[in-house]
Image (cartoon, rainbow, N blue to C red; front, side, top):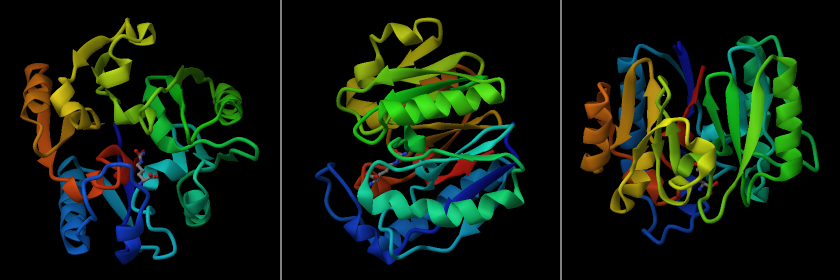
Amino acid sequence: MFSKAIVRQPCKNLINGLTSANLGIPDYSKAVTQHKQYINALLECELEVIILDAEERFPDSAFIEDTALLTPKCAIIMRPGEKSRKGETESIKTLLPSFFSNIEEIKSPGTIEGGDIMMAGSHFYIGISKRTNKNGADQLIKILSKYGFTGSTIQLKNMLHLKTGLAYLENNNLLIAGEFVNNKAFNDFNRINVPEEESYGANCIWVNDYVLVPGGYPKVKSKIELKGYKTISVDVSEFRKLDGGLSCLSLRF
Ligand code: CIR
């Protein structure tokens, strides 16, 4: 179970965030409203939500998940692969000692972003992507092993991050989309296949027996409900325009 989440308010400069989505420029005030609704959904799951101020220097800084990996035993500061995002870790480094006594950090030449890491129990799957390199993944696996965790890598083909197409919903249930559907590495999970036309809906988050689902993906939502979960829909259309989604908007621990 999680007790807390850290989020960062979207900055006005988010309209200049990185994207490959071709869905237009996000509407800042709509993004702020959607972010508030996201926070409300986390509160409904009984999390204490720590809300950090917007950081105008970093257009993508609302996607706070990419800056750290928080585990029950340690926090690990990431090293984002994209130049415009590297500085986002500074404020997280300052904050985390309030919550964690064991803090580790990925060092150069490793790059790694939190969106490429999926925790499934004590095992961590790490996507090798345009943002996360082998060196970053190897450093992470070495750190995790000090705390009794294991890790393995998954080569990405097209997706931005590992969790763009995967969400672990606990109880061995895995939501799986696109390029990961036929990947044998996930054969042992109870797989919930996401239909192609709703592939963005794969980026859900499990929070204390609820599953937050992006608004507008009814097939994904009903498949999750059929597994017995309570769902909460949150519209994140403005963040989708920047290739981001539900998981990217918080660090849960
Ligand atoms: C980026 O390209 O870095 C942002 N526009 C989106 C980051 C999304 N983060 C995530 O999936 N964990």
